[in-house]
Length: 171
Image 1 (cartoon, rainbow, N blue to C red):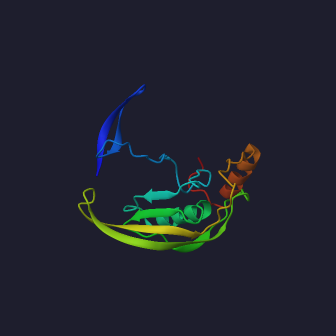
Image 2: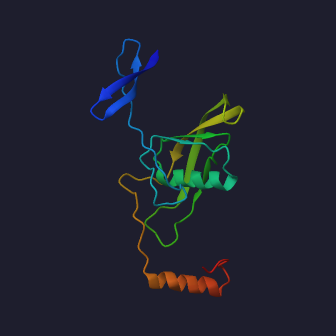
Image 3: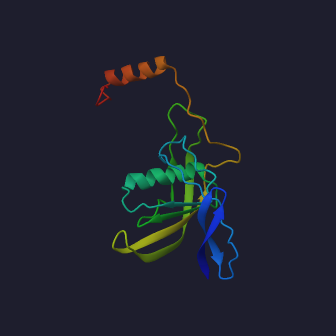
């Protein structure tokens, strides 16, 4: 059985997990990342396990997340989503103006589907446990630095988009 204990350190008191005989349990480091998974310059490529509370994501959001996983994560990475499964295969599109970032096919597999009650939704929810089988990940690649595009090039692209009627809001 596992229990919580308080441990005093130089930086204060914190909770730790211990066995019944008060042996501290080793806990792997956890990193939380705040950013958009649609941004190819936000990297989660070193993750072993990814959890996405996807209950409220639209289909396009799930597809975008799956593409980001397919671009960044190494084969074997576990991805857990709620209520909706990720597309198990797909195409990662190229990143405009940055040919350093790979594009191509990815493939995931469904390992398990687990149903359980969730207080947040007030009912049953399904967890989909998926594994990356094939991806665009390569040893030593990424994270990528966002390229600096000269202001002249940005202005030219905006002018061309305006001329073509492709901008809804010119500001």
